[in-house]
Length: 462
Image (cartoon, rainbow, N blue to C red; front, side, top):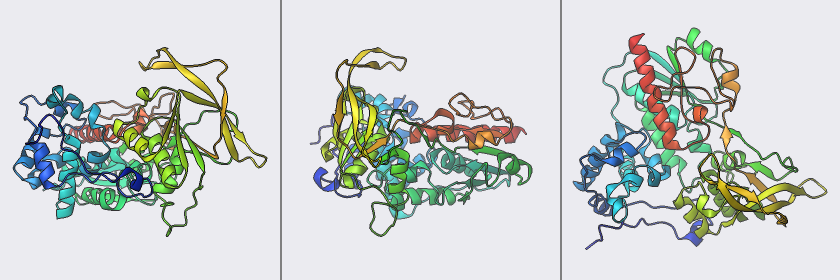
C-alpha cells in the first residue's frame, strides 16, 4: 500500500543524459499515477490551497474529478480560472503557493497539485479538448498589448465575457517570456506553449505580431482611431539590468535575456537554425533566480563548464528548490558567497576572467534576507570566457514615453491599481511585469485576470 504521507514520485530524465539535450526534464504523471496522487487529497471544506493560488483555481474540485477519472471535467474546472494550465503545471512555484499551504503537508508531503494540473492539461491537449468560448459576443473592442502570461490571461478572460479582443505582440511569434525566456527543457514550445496559445485563440482572440506599441501604433491611436474602448498593457519587463562594474562591455558578456532569447526563441541550440550563439568553455552566470538557473543549465547543455556566482549563500537562492536541485544534479557548479567586482579581458577585449571577492552574511536588509558583506582581503580571480548577467529586468520605457497621462514610478514601472489594473489614464489598464518588474508567470496571470475584471467593470458602467 502506498504511503499517503509521501508524494507519488515523478519520472524524469536521468541527469547525465538530460545535461546533453534540450528535451523536457520531467515526464509528468500517467493516468494511474495521477489518480493515486489525487487520492492523497482530503478535500478540505475550507481549502487553503485555493486561497494560496493567485488565480483561485478550484483545486479540490478538479482533484476530485481526477479521483473519479473524469479528466474532461477536471480540465474545464481549471480552465475557468487559468488560460495556461499546462504552462503553470510546469513553471509555477507551487511550493510557495497552493502546495505551501496544503493541509496534507502539515504531516508529510503536500499533494502534488502542480503535477496534477499538468497531467490534466496534457491529457486535454492529447484529446484535443479546448476551453468553452462565450455563447454570446458583445462586439466591444479591447486591445491587449503583449502576448505573455498577463496578456494571454486578460485576453482569454475578456473573450469568455464576449469581448472582441486583439492582442498586439512586438515579436514575430506570440508567447512573450514563455517563448523567449524559459528553456525548452522546462517548457516545450511547440507541444505546450503554442497549443495553449491556440486555445486562447479558439475563444475568439485575435493576435497581431510584429506590432511595436509606441512605434507601429500608439495607445492613443488605438483608442481614438481604431475603435478600441479599453487597453490592457501586459508588455512585460524585457530591459536587462547590469552591475555597472569595469569590463562589463567586453566581448563575451551577455544579459540572460539575450542569451536565452537566442537559444529559446531563435533556436540556436538546433543545427538546422543559423542563429549564432557563443560556444563557451567556462561560463559564469551572475545571479541566483530561476532565470539564472535557466541560463546556467542552457550553457551546460551547449558544452560549457557552467557556474552560478551568487553573493549570498545557497539557502538564500531565490530560484525554485526544484530548479536548484535539477541544476546541481546536471553538473552546474554553485559559487555562493561570491561577488564579481571586475570583468577581466585579453588584448582583443574578450572576457578572460573575473576579479571576485568572498562574502559573508551580516544583518538582515529591507528584504528580510541577511545582507552580504565583503570579506576584507578575499579578492581572487576566476577564469571564465563568458559572463551572463541575470540580475533582473525592468520595463521598456517605449510605451510609457509615448502615452500621454500614463504614470510610471522611478523604476519605469506603470503605476496601476493591484485589484483592478486601472492606471492613471482613462480606459487603460496594466498588469504583470510591466507594473511589478520581473516576477513569476502565475503572478502575471493573476494581474491579467484582475485587469480583465477591471476592464469589464469599466465598460459595463461606461
